[in-house]
Image 1 (cartoon, rainbow, N blue to C red):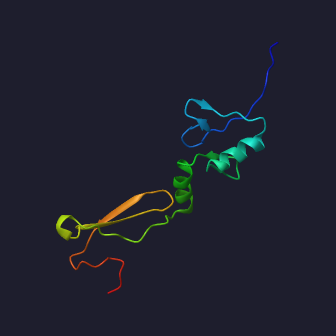
Image 2 (image 1 turned 90 degrees about the vertical axis):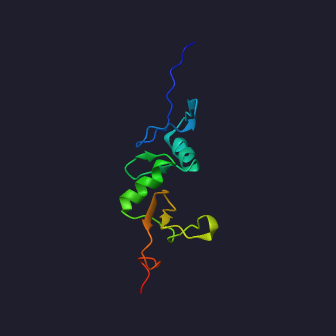
Length: 113
């Protein structure tokens, strides 16, 4: 007997990644079951029905909100306990990294004088 069955799979609208194992997509009987599985796997579903995988969603959220959730500026220590000539910070949500040179006074440029 041959039967035609309809199923639902979830694809990232940004990168095309398919929800499931690397070698095969997961298939669901209903759209609700597919959405629940995607959200359990840290995917985001937009109000317009767009789906974003756990990798793309944080980047798109930062871009849509036009702001990042940066850590405080950090200045690493080099060998011999000498401070590095630059400092860095990163977004806790999407992991974008920023760096900048330290001013000649050694003070953070955002720090009030």
